[in-house]
Image 1 (cartoon, one colour):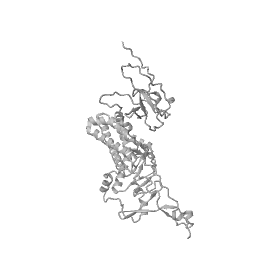
Image 2 (cartoon, rainbow, N blue to C red):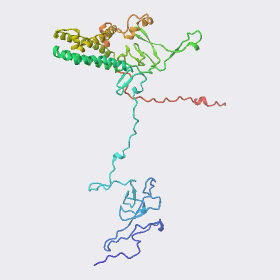
Image 3 (cartoon, helix red, strand yellow):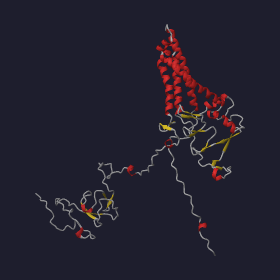
Image 4 (tube, rainbow, N blue to C red):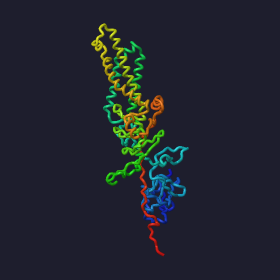
Length: 457
């Protein structure tokens, strides 16, 4: 039996040599040991690996603070001496040097025959990120200076008199619902189903026109279109201009069908109002082609919602007439069926139809009168404001022979008002507020020619 023994030669200079540039006392050989392999097997050699002389930032944690620790002895690529301060994060090269790859160890992975001997880095992690822009959260309707109320993220708008709108809503919906519940079943079976279907169509049309009129922009003109107009100084005072005079915006004029119209300046909205425009005190806005402010619909009636307003009052008038006529038909049919068709009998058998006749008759006087009034205004081509200010207009413009907005005939006026396309809103309620760019300060420094002193020759 062959016995394996350690080599007895104490000279180990062939397996480990101390570099000449490092003192022998500073080299730590605690981790350098002799192999216990059999004598016939080749002894494992200890190689010296030299670290490249690169300057590494101090932010890496595994780099030693002493520059003399540049040599180490290792028996395998993953078994490094602790005194070298180099761990498995270093990559060994063929020129007996090590190169630092990263300060964080790579995650474990399974090496295959086709995969490389180093982990792959995800390119998405190294892709530079674009700077994020601050979110735009303020919209135009949130900073609107008027007295309107917005809801549904600025899609709908109305005024602030909710109580009047609720009363109009109840006066429209209440009688119609009662008529559908108590009278329409009789009309469906005893008269014809088309009577009930036509009533439902009129009710839906009237209700939709009411909501559209109340929740639509009537044609509000944006503010600050002319914030700093030219002024005319009033020098007519006999006591001097400093006591009684005040700055008045310069007058602007336009020509409409050979007639000159003066444009009035609105101090609240900071703009010259176009012809037929007026400032609404309830909404605190200048409205294009404003007819009036309807408190029952809680909105101004202008260029963008006059057609649904006219549709609303016309269909409301037709509904009143419809309910009155067919409620009377219901009462007469009951009177024929009863032997004693007295007033008490009719009220006991069909009380709802009897009450609806009285209520709708009272509403017909109000809504019907308003409908006929606006029909006359449309055929003459004037608005409510122009009708009320007719005497003032004739006194201000004595040479005005006829209405410059008249189309020539009542039918053309009707087509112009009711069949023209609805213009777009000027407000841009849902658009984001544009940030105000700071104005560049005016340079007040004198020029070089003015500031430099003149030297005498």
